[in-house]
Length: 142
Image (tube, rainbow, N blue to C red; front, top):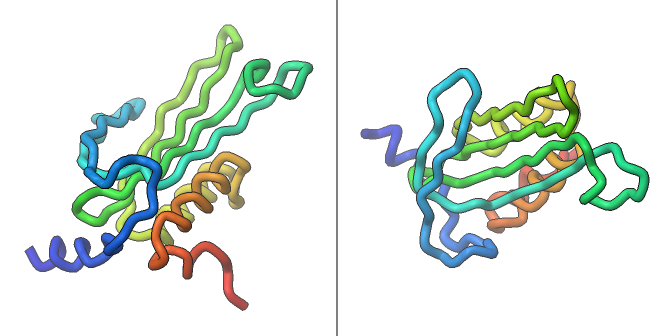
């Protein structure tokens, strides 16, 4: 009970999100594990792909979509979907629950070999801009 009270303090008083203010129900697919279901807000998303000759998104033949959610309990859910159009390759659905934005950052950098990939960076920056309380972690202060 005490943990839930402490976690709820992470929910900012005012979220700056594109969706309406009411939380939505989500179900996130995970390969090799139970799906995640929760109520919350999507606070960040990013997409990046490769392939094709025109440089336009519609020509991508491999890519990644990253989404970051804030749950009504104050936790974060990170969804990473690697997709492909190539025969013999399979898409990958990953998701995890994080207790802090620092843990979100660690998960995103782990997925991309130690740094934020383009889709992860886009989602990360959007999530950090979702509330003034989150902006303090967006950059590394030196």
